[in-house]
Length: 107
Picture 1: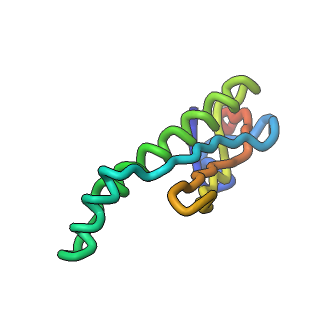
Picture 2: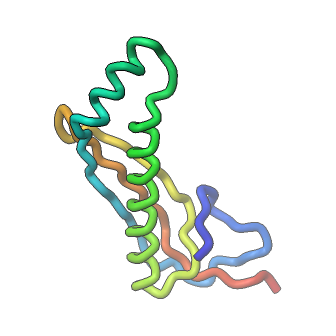
């Protein structure tokens, strides 16, 4: 599966557009990570626990989007975009979406 944030892949032609595909996940913080974050906030620096949480969330959302595209018979997803929104005080949604397409080598 080819994944791209651009709308064209050099050397490929879009043969068929299959529709919009998406994947999302909602993740909540936990007390253990919050305690570590408080200490990091005092001394400064990256809050690695939250970086890891958001990275895992993005990967899960991408996996769900790819699965949806595969069900449609796509071999690529173009124009991929990410968005994040807060659902409640301690939870955020990661949404990823793009256009499922069938691409082939240019002739």
